Image (cartoon, rainbow, N blue to C red):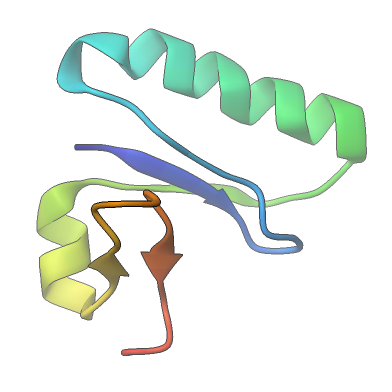
Length: 66
């Protein structure tokens, strides 16, 4: 499941495979509204590779495991 997050604040979004366009739009909207960048996207395979963990209850991405 693709996840997008901001490297400057706690903003993050998760989408199902059929919501990829909405996720991309949310990333653009966050950048336009805040000026934050880069907004990065991770897919499940990336989380497994880098060690990020996804809390299934809250949807939060734990990047402290890197």
